[in-house]
Image (cartoon, rainbow, N blue to C red; front, side, top):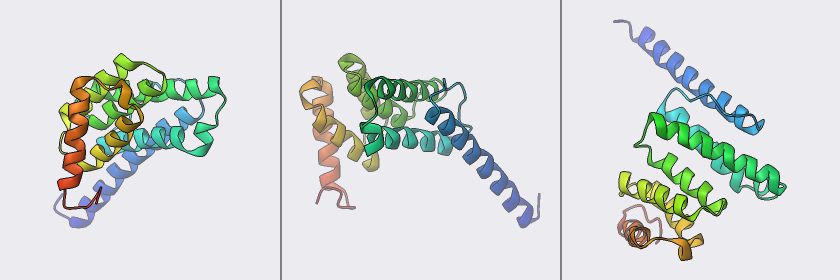
Length: 166
């Protein structure tokens, strides 16, 4: 493929396929069906995980009837675990798993998943912001390791050049 236009079309086609995969997984999740499909790329995995978090944390998600909320939480956990099975170093998938575990009152699962997220991506500021918010909500449930990691995340954000906490 020496033609730049052909390369551009190939990139566009692969991006479209990846995005379509993420949209299909999100639609499966929203429909409340068992999620047995995986996204095709890191980008679409992140999109699906972001949609899970958004749907659980927005007003509509927070006001779901308890049984429907539990089902939505379980669907997000299924999605995050499937992504973790194919990409164990996806710190965002571990974070989503920690979030869901906390919401389901699974303290051991929460601490284990949060620890993995810290270990895999200790210097990712965007993820540190999410972890700080979750750790503050679950402060009394944090293990000693996660308490120390929480302080490290706050320090990272305070020392960063993007002014996340300043």
